Image 1 (spheres, rainbow over the protein chains, first blue to last red):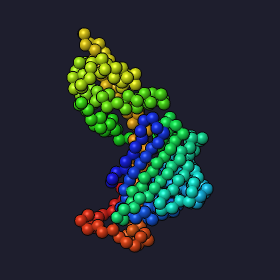
Image 2: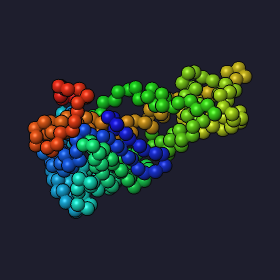
Image 3: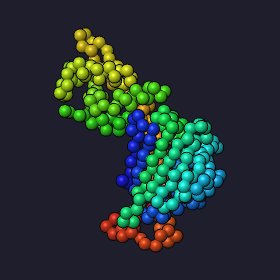
Image 4: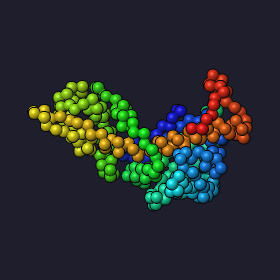
Length: 161
Length: 130
């Protein structure tokens, strides 16, 4: 699982991801909750991340901005639900470019033999919301390597029955 | 691409026979008899699948002499996968950066004391950023 696994089934408003890291989960938890660490990894390298607030507790709110080289800023905010712990954390997520559309993200840290699998389960208000939120929230500044169609076609393995 | 179109594309892709038809069409246009050949289903069944693919904009059909040829339309596939591909890229790049950060933290000793046994893996790894 060196690469992230992303699952988004048609017809249900979820996105699931899984990714293994070569570190114990206490360290993963720090990287996800310490603002000084978070800004060093969250988001594409081309963005500067600025944290407005990051109040890691039950009911605490968070807000951060991704700033592009052109000065454009994209804000995101939400609230932690339940006390975040090395076992996992639950939070809401809203992209300020599309206000009113909120997802619920649950993250779990599973440690085994010194390695940790980070799993996320995101629940959107509808399938349409999921697709639109992801598209709008990710759209800016992402360079497309355009072999994706080929990749998709390659996955469309012929089924001879 | 609006939500209805996107749903039509995902709905069309949800069926393994229809995915196989698309895979076949990447090799070139084909008539319904050619498309039916690999399957143990009837020609009318394949025609119904083609109709779904056509309504999703994934296939166009042209009449050439007496044969009706099906042609793969790639654009809706590109649109349908783009949103998810961006999501994946975002997290893929973030998590690669996180790998580097975690490695640095563990080297510093500011991380956790017990170092996992890594013999057999690359020793003396260079940890370039990027």
